[in-house]
Amino acid sequence: MSFEILKKSSVSRARLGVIHTAHGDIHTPAFMPIGTYGAVRSLSPEEVRGLGAEVILSNTYHLWLAGDEIIKKAGGLHKFMNWDGPIMTDSGGYQLFSLGEKIINSKIQMPNDKPIQSKITEDGVAFRDSIVGDEHLLTPEKSVEIQHNLGSDITVVLDEFTGDINNYEKVKATVERTTRWAQRARKAFSGGTAQLQYAVIQGGMFPDLRKQSAMELSQLDFDGYCIGGVAVGGESSQEQYKAVEMSVPYLPEDKPRHLLGVGTPDQIVEAVKRGIDTFDCVIPTREARHGKVYVSNSSFDISHSSFREDFRPLDASCDCLACTHYTRAYLHHLFKAKEILGIRLLTMHNLRFYMRLMQVIHLSI
Image (tube, one colour):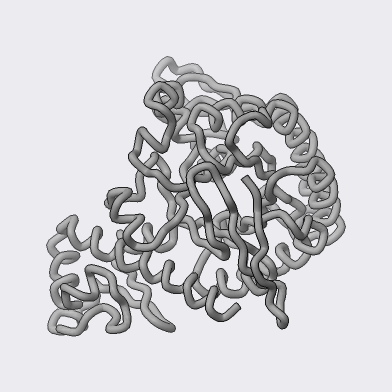
């Protein structure tokens, strides 16, 4: 359960490393496919592994509401979903923010006609879930407990952030609460488990607040650090890069750094240059479901009529099942016919594209 740096770039902050976990090694820089409910959408764990993925990221919030106690009885998330590699789970905090007016910050009219105002307090986040309407309180300690039940290899502490990354007073308040919550989560975390625990750096677009967050959380000696608050809706690539540049210099050199929710191929390359080790994002799988295909130096929409009689592979340089066995015309046909096979094949291709991108980055370093 450690992080080993194998090589550092001589021209940037990029580095090669290995995160050793109880379920295997993660060679960094690494990309984590998203398995929100314990499954990468439309693919089996065996297929995901075959595409080159070493680690996946699952969602604490959704798995909690689905039944983390059941998953614990099954022997943990690895056995439950038949994935024998490392798993990272987030804290659940982002989902409570991203669902926004639907769950967190508005009155929700439930079947009993009694609206409830969900809110963030010093204790945690009080809300009514979107499945059966039960009331919950997600605290830093509860997030640790849920992730312990899931048995993930890398866990993330509950943090608070604001969507208004340029409001100094709001961002400062969230930085301070994030530190207090991190202290509670660190205390609740059992060092005797085969898990790693990551903290989340906040601070919006303010250098002093990014520095404050990074330094305060570093003093708590977490196993790794996430940079958050830069992929929550509307932030530009340049804002993401700036947030990384403001945070990385104040983080321990010997601990892995994860950039939450990022990103496009270009964003990943630029973040690696700035010292990021691991990434997670829905882009390759979500956009595959809408017909977007990533190929070398570009992307395109397979549903466009121009591909109706295009009998070339998606990408002649790719070794995935979609590229070696099927044509653009056939994949176009599958999408127009709304056949699930089209989504599966494009998901395979996009994930393989991301895995090949990480291989190129490794060789470049």
